[in-house]
Image 1 (cartoon, rainbow, N blue to C red):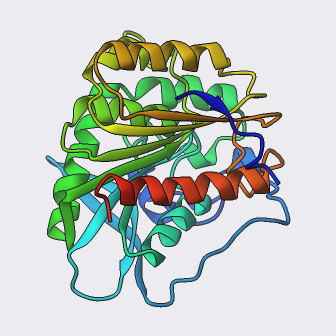
Image 2: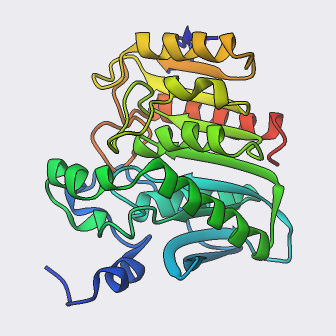
Length: 287
C-alpha cells in the first residue's frame, strides 16, 4: 500500500571505448558527480571475491562488477542496475554490501555498447548520447545474459532478485515485467511514468506484465517523480491482480536519497530503505 513513512525517518589514457569501460567499471566515481561528499560509504572486500568481470552476450563481452562471498556457494543472486552514471564506485559498493549478506551481487555495465557513462561531465549529453540509446529490449537481454553468467559463477538463480537506482530503479520494474523468474525487486526512485528510449513503454503501461513482488522506495520531494504517478502505478498493478507490490514514500526526501556520495543523501531514509530492501528479499525467497 502506498503510504507516507514519517516515523521511519529519524583526461585519461587512450583506450578503445569498450576497453576503457572494461578498465574503469566499478572503479572511481562518475565525472558528472564529482566531487563526492564526505559521508561516502566504502565497504571492504574481506571475505569476498570481488572485482570486474566480463559477461558474454553473444559475441559481445559486457563488462560488469561482481561481489560474492568467498567459497563454493551456491548463493542467491541479486542483479544491481546502475543509475545513469553507469557502474562506478557507488554501485560496486552496493554489490559488496550485498555480498557481505551472502548474495552473489552483479552489476552489468548496461551502457557499454553506447559509451562510457562515467566519463561525461554534462548530464544532458549523457542522457541523450548514452542513456537514451539503451532500449529496454537490449537491457533486458543483457540482464538475461547476466543471469546465465551468474548461474555459472556459483549463483542460485532460482533465488533471483534485482535492485536498482533511478534509471536502474525503472529497470528493476521493467525487468520484473520481462522475466517471471524474478522473485523480488527493490526499485529505488525509478521513474514509472516515462521512458528514456523512444518507443519504450512506461512502467505503468507494462503494469499488467509485472507478476513479481517489487518494493518501490521513493522520496516525496522528488521533483522528477510525482507521488501521483506512484498511486497510478499501484492502482494498475492491483487491477492486474498483483497484490504483492508495495510502495514507501519518505516525506521531505529528494531524489537519489540513497546515494551517499552526493548531497542528495538522506541517512535516515537510506538506512531505513536498505533495511527494507534486505527484509524484502528474505521475505520473497531471495536469501
